[in-house]
Length: 304
Image (cartoon, rainbow, N blue to C red; front, top):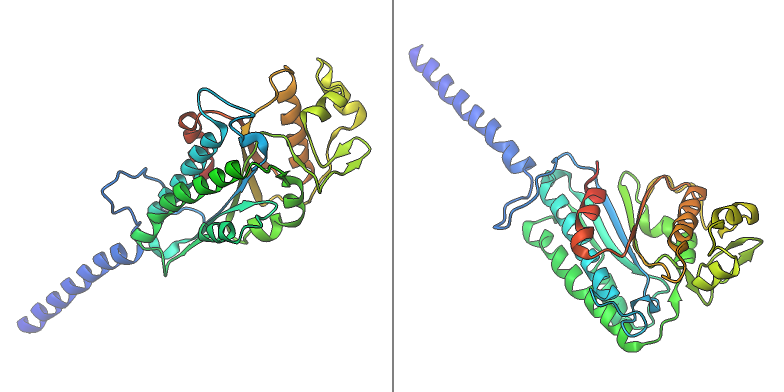
């Protein structure tokens, strides 16, 4: 009888050890690294993060130079912060619950097949089956090197045709940027102006574009700009609807300094546009230095 009791105690000890050790292997967050990691809740939502680049002449360092930091370099800093925030999000999640993705888009799509291959390399999907620590740590590496090549190629090419942000929202947002049961985040890197030569639409006071010339032509460069917008129904033509599952972060707003009301008008256009398309969660930010923008990006992406 005594031997049987001892045997049962030994068996019970093995079961207790097994129960304690199993969750650590099956449910632990992937935080093992020599680098410090911000601690987030391991019960995080699945993220679907998309980045849309505006590669219009706003990034031209000769046309729009900036002594503090060129605007394309600011973009690269923002992209680094986005990728880093996504990477830290993954490293804090329980490994068996990882189902997250990040991708980068240019519209219109480049004609260069090599450039398209680089864009394909930025479409990264992580699941419980492939989310190793080494694979997760490649996110910032890829999003540091490939976007830099894209920007440098665009500047060297010097053929800025504009960025078709309006048509992207119309034709691609649902298929490219929205996944069921995910927190869908779109980060748009733009100066706030929208123009593409193939998408110039006008419906009374509504347009598919916004340029400094548009703002001056609509007489929105005076103190009664808001009254003019309301009276003439100025704004963007809604490109979509029912986008309530999409959250949008617009970075890099850079208004024409000659008009003191330019920034207000740009913000008004985008805010009204989002409201008409059903986008409830969004933020619009000026072209801050990346060091100042980093915390803003982290807060937006890490929000639960």
